Image (cartoon, rainbow, N blue to C red; front, side, top):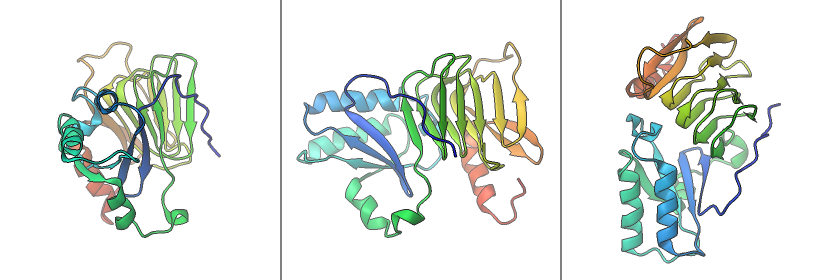
Length: 230
């Protein structure tokens, strides 16, 4: 079984992210000044070039901890998300109320790595992997599920490592050295003909295709359909 092998970068984390069935939970530190938390949230969300701005429907549940939730604080957090894309923002309590399914029946939570994955470093996880940062040449990402890179992807990635042919690899700046989904491998050219942009890779039969991120929502609808052929 794949396991987490990457170490988190040192330093104070004012915002932590975890995946649940209905979206992503953003846990905000409640023991520091709110301005620091807001700056950390904006930094994690990026400057508008992250996959959050692809148009895919994402629900963000915000856990404010013991901090008093004033209208001003809630409005500031919602504006931080709106600066990235049309993301539905809810208070974390709503995630609990909307999700009566026992935890043992939920899909495996994604592994979120914050920082640059450097040459020679490997991140492995049994489930989805989310990289909030860059993946340098010589770095390796291996996941049994999907791989999302909120930054520049220039390393080696293997999604669907346990044989999942519906897995995808998505990045804000897509220029990997090699992409593998299940058993299908695609090696990229030494030099790209166009600047890196928001794209994702998926399988069409035994061939790999790379599409613009704007097609992702349509692709996800297709694979959820019984008529989809992947």
